[in-house]
Length: 175
Picture 1 (cartoon, rainbow, N blue to C red):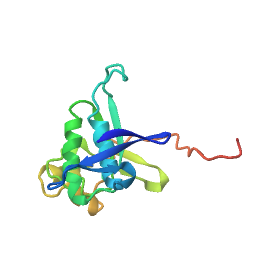
Picture 2: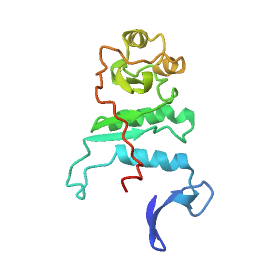
Picture 3: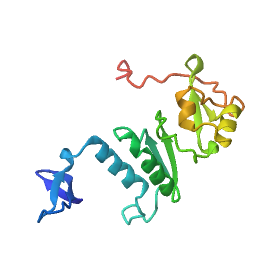
Picture 4: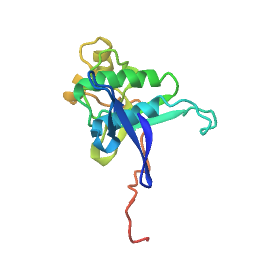
């Protein structure tokens, strides 16, 4: 992969060695699949080194929304391995609806938070005791519990939200 100027834009160009070919094949980012580009961006985010431009500091927190999107489900275990490796250097928070990403039996129950939305109020908390017990005893994976709609927040760990305002992000009246 290399940086490449294309008119007034800058893009990246991928190179692939192909057996029997004298020269590498070259592809612009626009020719790559969405899954490949997303995977590249995620890997870049979680393995970014402290650079002089960042003042020599690695990020303290990385948030990823559905990192498995546009990836083949079989790549979920590779993605999980990369996330674990990246988490050695900074905290990584991942949101996902993917049972495939959670199918790994080695995921610690305490590393998963559950979300529900009773009566229009979003609640987040540790997995309830029944779910934690099933995961610790390895009766189910977190992905299997998600498929069965059995991942729920523990009522004891959920903080009640007293100010449940819905913010109108697209209020054109105030513009």
